Length: 138
Image: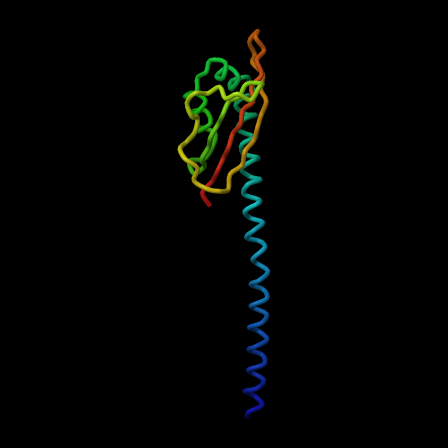
């Protein structure tokens, strides 16, 4: 009868060690998810900037210095749970927008920043650098 209890204890210890080892394999997945989240934010930021300027809409708004329209356009392109901050620079990296173009303060440490170079469609041919930062609450 003691042999049966001993066998059960060995099987129980074996199952416990398998469970412990399998739970350790899940830890690297959580770290990879964080990196993937930043990559997704970068991809989203690129898509937003390219989509807004595909027909020159964004460069026209920058030429007009219509910061509120730019804020509204970006807000329409991203989910409500995503924070953004957009800064417009000239070719010398001097900020042009005098008011913040953002949805408030950053909500997460996981943020992505994407720069995009756009050109004015008018005769002055100005070059702008648009920096869009996105963050998502995890």
